[in-house]
Image (cartoon, rainbow, N blue to C red; front, side, top):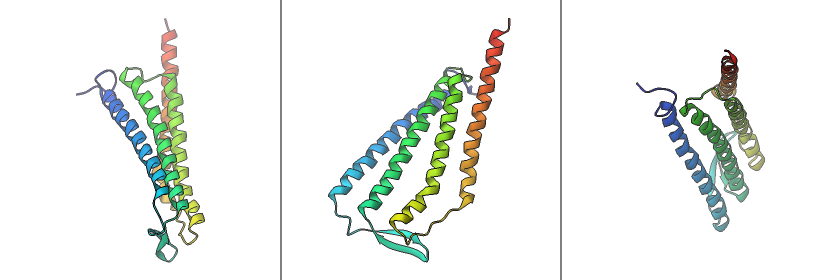
Length: 177
């Protein structure tokens, strides 16, 4: 059975997976930027996009503002994912070293929680902003889709407090003679 912490542990394997994910997201962001630049050189008036309308699906012309909006959202989302994964890589680096109760991990976990909250906010504002470009788009705010993301954010915040308590207890133990 593999250990959870230290060199050669599950944490080390997860750190490698996070390294791969980190560079994959950077590559995806580069592709998005490339597609955005390429979109200026192709005529878009021959393309339509299918959107959810108030009375059912609608076909709307694909415009440069729509391309910019969608790719901008994807780029911001990828940037937030890079931020989250970079913080997770640092957390897992300490876990792989066998030092889970690092004071920096408290800050990193909080950063991750705030970034996850930002992702949830982005998901909430995507449709209303899309409706500004295409007024015939139906804006659907289904709060039931927020249950898992909100609990994930709260879980990471709680986890940061657990690590904070572990740091405090470890510090007290180090002071004990």
